[in-house]
Structures are given as structure tokens and as C-alpha cells.
Image (cartoon, rainbow, N blue to C red; front, top):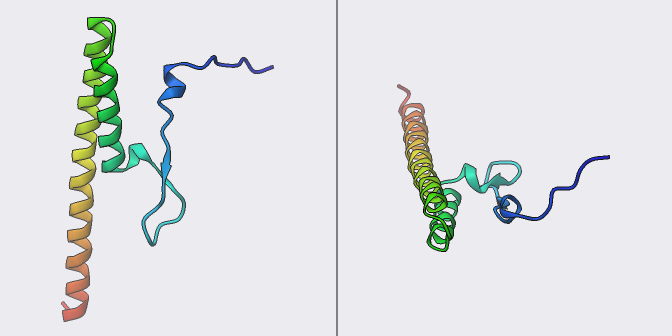
Length: 96
């Protein structure tokens, strides 16, 4: 028999999937998109503001900082990928 986990903060933070962009199959988890990471960071900041203990507030604020950094990284990766794809398309169009 598999033990049941009681409802709690981990279940409250369930990460919803979002629709995949055109050309991609399946939905992407919020943590795999810059916008999703920013929403998770905002939720963490909201939770930190209502935290009862100073230690828990600091931990949750750190989590928000990490989500924000991940969002920035994902933005940079996407921009680089789009730029690379544009260069490839351009070189194919010009024959170089």
C-alpha cells in the first residue's frame, strides 16, 4: 500500500502545465518557461510576506530570487536560440 501524503504546502505549489507553442508537442511545465518562473517567483514573494517566521520568510524569498534568475536564464536562452535560427535562415536564403 502506498502511503498518502496529507495536503500541504507542496501540493499547494503544484506547477500547472501550459500550452506548448506552435510547432512543439505537448504542454510545458510552468518551471520550463520564463513566464511560469516569474509567476512562481511572485507566488513565493506573496507567501513570504505572510510567513510567520523570519527563517521561513528568508527561505521563501530566496526561492523567489532563484525562480527570477531561472526566468532570466530562460529568456536569454530563447533569445539566443531565435537569433541563431534567424542567422541560419538568412544564410540558407543567401546561399552562404
